[in-house]
Image (cartoon, rainbow, N blue to C red):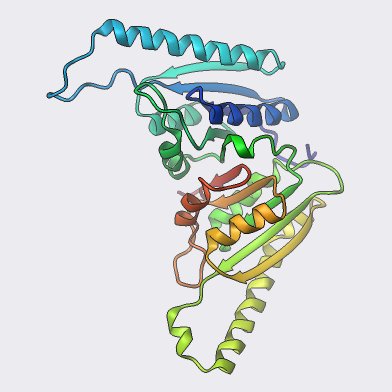
Length: 300
């Protein structure tokens, strides 16, 4: 852990007891051990939801049995955390999943919220595949989403930061810097992907080439300033500016470079020449080959 990094003290982990949730917990445990943090393990059962008028009510004993089962399983997960010498608190909630998870993170002043991207099915389960995007949009703290094929990319030595140079991108980069490993072999790839406006196709080839060269040069200069935060902590920086569909370029670089973590802002600038991170995040979320850290700007 870097000596100049922010110390992570509280990590909220949401679980539906699925394989993907287990991968999320394992990742959070690695972070907790390195930072000396505690884990708040929460499950949103949403058992108290009222039935629609045309649905036959289920016997209360059935709900109580489901609640007891959820409590038992949550405690079993907590015991596995304690066995690895990490402090843990459990919390069973009954409100809609995304809202309750975000509320738990806020109430416990979480430094990090970790969830799986695919949940198990069933009436009493947390559908993390659909809920994760709502958590990402609503959470005020950094959120890390992971799933089992991409588990255990720890420590973070290779970081991919797609950026549109917005405040959200800067916040995500700062949060990711706190998670980077120590040592001389750390590197960050700062990526700016852009799409050409349709109107550009009508321009003469030489004019188009000159304007694009100017745009790339100007963007590289801005990215160089953006990346200075990583150079100051001894991380090697590579800057990439390229045309293409943003989420596809992000996925490509994450796989090709064996990235340990992707860090993205949840609200990007608007405009045809910008990487629209708000919508791009939801494209990257289910296909990322490694854990994905997202962060909203502080003023959202």
